[in-house]
Image (cartoon, rainbow, N blue to C red; front, side, top):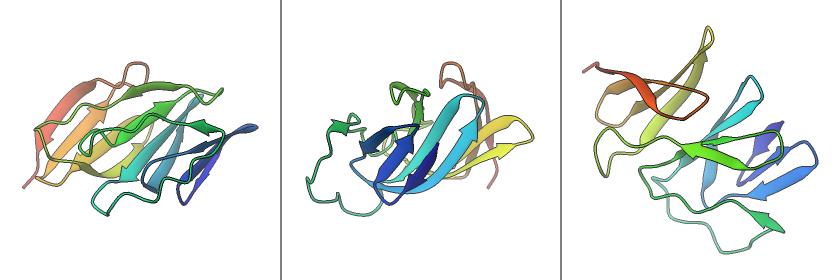
Length: 118
């Protein structure tokens, strides 16, 4: 599994995403992608398989090994996209613009812990 520019490759499947890929994290059998939704949308040059277009603040996406979108992380607050994504010793974490650090359940994409850090 790998990611680059707007294209994410998962095995032999290449997905063209609607925004630039900021970060890619392999977590178990998932590929978790943080999209840079703070820059303008890229041109509509689509590949054979396109991932759904997320809302700007739903920019952390989890794909399975077949390239199927399994979930997206809901925002802590509307209109506030995530700006960081890491695998922290087996814990999937993302942070948003307003200073919230969030732990994500990798099986569902749901937030299991939200901490304000600013």
